[in-house]
Length: 141
Image (cartoon, rainbow, N blue to C red; front, side):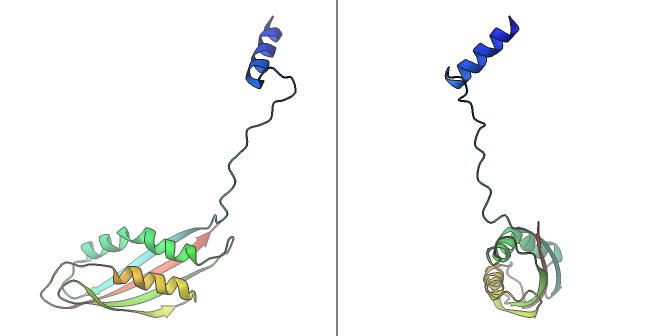
């Protein structure tokens, strides 16, 4: 009796045709499964508070990681860092962004990182300031 019930369930699920069952198809793997890590360190001079700057940088980590990941071919393993010096006016707008150390040697990543950093907006202050930002990138498997 139990076998007959099981057979009826299998036939009902298969559409009633014996031997037509196939396992479900799985989604295709991501063609670019690169994952990365990014750690940051910053040093400030000027009126900007460290807490504000850290929150600003932390809020841009996804964009900065995307810069790195877009530049890598599938399955690539690499790591390195940029040290970037950035000046900003009393208005809060960046005035310059220069990569002073580049161990990654990925020009597309460097250009993208500079674009993201030049999009930072700081609060208005009474004087100019300077930020030194270290970005440590690593691809993970």
